[in-house]
Length: 93
Image (cartoon, rainbow, N blue to C red; front, side, top):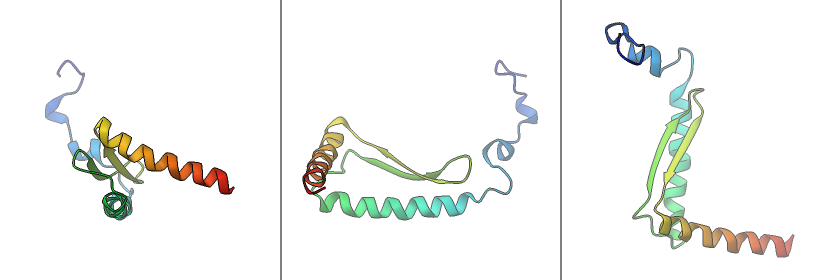
């Protein structure tokens, strides 16, 4: 047994990473489709995605997740159009 309390010889990675009966593939597909939509629209909106890391994944419950990692400058590029759109919605609403 190591310092984490886990006996490496008895460790089954599949039992730790996957839960039987959870449809991870469906969640990943959903996240992949959403990621493709986001990947298409960001450059169309004039947002430089050079510093972005986008990944489709799933949560422990099998739900899809899109992970978006940005540099501070890329984050600001996304925040500006979001602020503009929010201001427009407030004026018309």
